[in-house]
Image 1: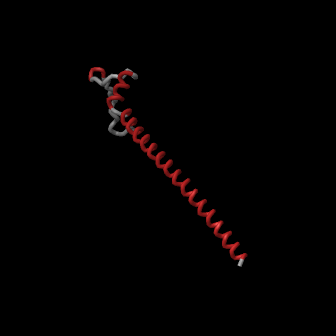
Image 2: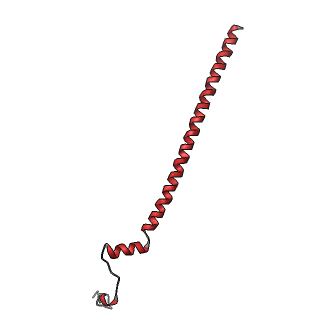
Image 3: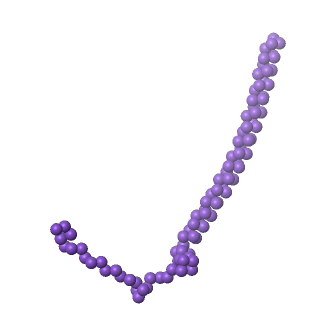
Length: 96
């Protein structure tokens, strides 16, 4: 009878240690989940900010201002436009 009690006590101890270990791992995973969710929120916020920045940088008015000020470009005006006339190709297609 003493051996049976010793075996049952050892199994009970192993079960208790297993329970404590699984509870500890569960808490660690829960903490890690919270950190990952916070990081996901931060990344989502940064993504939205980057999209707003991209939209701001691609605005037509900004591009136009950079072209005028930074690159010294001007708008097209008819009196400064050069038209090049190319002679028409022969009707026979050039093969004789």
